[in-house]
Length: 360
Image 1 (tube, helix red, strand yellow):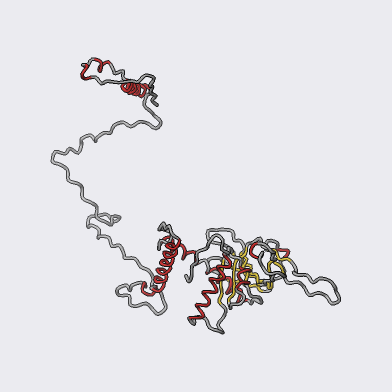
Image 2: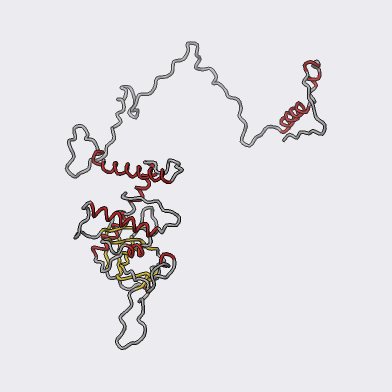
């Protein structure tokens, strides 16, 4: 985790993301982690980002953008060259390329096939020089006067045999901000996109293990400070990974260089069987609890009170008799046994005029 920024409701998410990437690149260049002559930095985003606009905003940096597109997108090829002698306006775009319509997809320029462990056979096909149709609304509404830019890139279609859990796989569409993709570029790009999912596990660790969302903070500044503390703790844990190697098992010797030691659990040793125990009995059984001297083994077992059958209820008469007795006590009319008491032992029940009681 390199940077975090709080988004306000009025912020442009793509513009803020572009500023973040630019700031991170400047820090990498200032510390010498990227130098002139190194390969471009690959930035991988998901379908929630407008990867074409992000590539337009970062066109002056040595970075490559790779992002997933929705399966209902429609892109366009560059316009064909105008035949000589033809007058009129030159077309702005060429043939249509619809992701969901196979009839609009010509022969791909690159096709690779890879065998994987979890997904079976992976077929990646690529088409070159495809761009989206931009209109003057939303993020492009305030673009300077003139024609909108043509942002070309390579489209990669990723298809696998099967997914985990016997789910039916659907193709994944990727857009790369560079053209003229080779077979090596296609394999590198779709494998890099699959590694992007590791970030989801990082966020889960932030929330469940490090307690990112546990405190209920009132101030935005306090939430920002807590977020940076969580990022610092995660960085310390990543730097301490060599210190958390498995300890050597006594008598096994040090592991080979570059090899990971298999995780072992302490063995559970059970006590030896008794000499007079059967072959299937492996552990000691508890001794019988001592009985008193006058205990009779043949005495009848203690019986329990009979239980009511399922669905059986108490008679309605007893319930109504009990309820009427309670109402009589609360209303002042005591039973006959209470009338035989002396005046000093009786309770005084006062009732106001017009007062009534209702018992449910």
